[in-house]
Image (cartoon, rainbow, N blue to C red):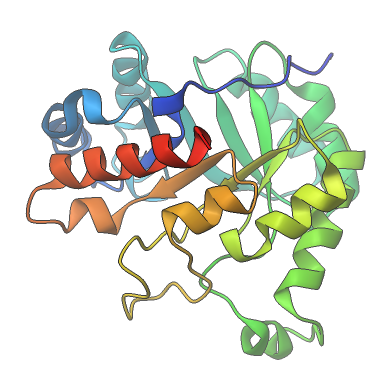
Length: 241
């Protein structure tokens, strides 16, 4: 299959809200609550377990929201190719595969069609050098992330998921047109949660991010919609420079 055209995100599509909800009712309540403050939603494993995953996906598309399927596919190449081929029939902008195996990523890239863009997960933002050491990897996250980004790019993957800490290094190594999506965004600084490699909004975009994923800083705010609007204003200021 041919690769989709390079993705052009609108200004307000650069904020992706992590729609971590246990079922359809709660997921759509969040979409109603956030309104036009959010135009792009990431749906992941928690919603998958509810059985409502594709009904929510369809509803997001009906409301003209972009959809990011974050299920981090990792299996033998034929299996991952099959699931990517099937997912290409749905109205999805991004989906994730693990960036650990070049052959698997190449199979995924060759199987996709339509407007589906693939993102390789490099090193989870909940992990640091100590975690890698326990996995037998005696290198720093930045080194691993850039290496995996280059392998993903060579395999035909459209971009990566990576901490904003490494966004500048990835942009320098992979150039323009390669998508960098950064989770672990903490607008107010580190929050003492399970995210270890975090940056602020301006820092992520200043280092070359195309989009950011934000969950808890919006979800746990006293006024979630106002929090999302504040992030949108910060993004607008960053990309207008």
